[in-house]
Image (spheres, rainbow, N blue to C red):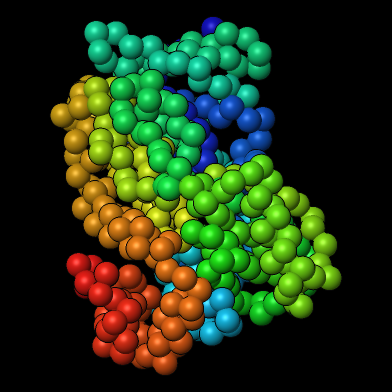
Length: 396
């Protein structure tokens, strides 16, 4: 008879979910990870960039089989073409490697399996089992049949659309101004710098940016994101991307190999990520960087903390909100200040016209930047062009 009772059920087999499952299982917890799709790693939902530092902090050893391209740095390009070049050491959390997410996600899930976690595909949670205000498991469907499993704790690793948190009473609501709608092609037959990621600012992608992430040879992920509050009609994001490609000599002769559409949260983190028998990780906990829209590294770092604490809770037999607060403190100490600062800066940046963005990138390109953080960028602007940063004074 198939087992239906666990210490932990992880809902969602993306990077944050798999890392959580792996580290909890390593500590002896009985873990089930469920994934609504029939294949882990599908469908792709991001530009696939991550830093080597982010992988190291997540205790993930680089496997060349899931690396599409090694990246030397990044280019920040203003609307008029002013360019700030940064090497990998100071280019932020999305630069270092461009992944093959289909293989990367499968590899992390395989690590979880080797640690002892069970994996169940085509299994969608449609609700939580809640008894006396405590989460006790999930109900849903598995390969079209009714599904029910009990657990001492359920982990919501179900991404941007996270329903697990909402079902469990945690506040996960998003405003349109905290959602970026994205469209991306994997394009071939293009001519871009093979080892630099590119971020293009301004009205090319209102409230967001366009990107080019090399995938090796003449192929790259080419996409853009537009803030939800700036959209007026269906299909507008794809139209912005098609126009961008048509107007770029390096891209206009390229052809798509894959097209994806997705939404990404660019919000502050959730007010609470734990409750009795419930824990959120990754995009479900809103740890995507509000400026870059990148969340793989943050989700994996959070997954390490979650797995460690869940393993300790399994040993103690205590998955109360109080016991899970250790996880809450760990990830907030590591990530929260930067997430909040970047969200507040994002709120300012989306108000700036193209001319101001041109001036900012020009000044930064002429500055001696040692690191690419919000603080260092604003400090450089304050020194060289103080009138541009009056509204950002509180962040410096």
